[in-house]
Image 1 (spheres, helix red, strand yellow):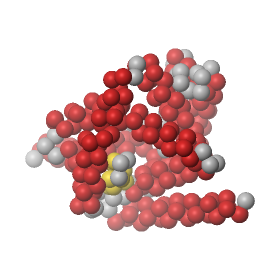
Image 2 (spheres, rainbow, N blue to C red):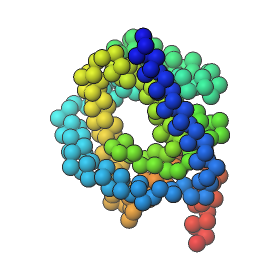
Image 3 (spheres, helix red, strand yellow):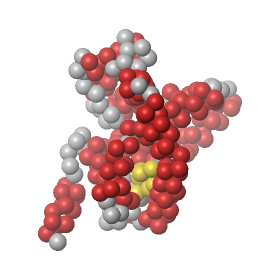
Image 4 (cartoon, helix red, strand yellow):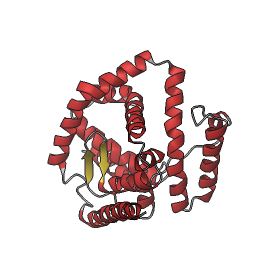
Length: 250
């Protein structure tokens, strides 16, 4: 019991400190979204080398040898687990209708969909949402803060990294496996999750490499615009519309 309290206190302190950094950075980076570009490019290069040497080849082999229905089932499984995070953040954003819908999707897929491997709710055209704590912070007015590239995980920001830590600690079922002593199963699922995500991005990353003179800048701008749009439920924020129009004039 005592150790659990210590673990809880530590994770709460980490989350609180990251949130404080996020709030402070909101005031300091209104004009420059990438003040850590030097460091970020270094991490991006590291990620790129690791991806080309190990992660992408593994994902390519996985896609080649695994039947499409099996890949879809695995992707559905991890997507269904993510519904727990979505439901909590629906509630934190007072989107109660969405929370009810997403909770319903989770229950249906977890039961009739065989632990989520079959997207039964999708077959019934039940709407799917995706929310995380980074979006929740943005919804309540917290700026994204400086752009960050995380080792292995890729594009993020101070706000979204804060959100990732919070979601991992509070609503990620895989994290609970580690905390309950199932370390091996936890590591296996994390690896499978990484390969699943990388497989989804195989075509996209190839297009970025071929179409962009500076893949780092392209990925950074695309990430920030996408996250800003997600915070506004799919709308393109005014700041990006202005940036695009200014570039056209130039």
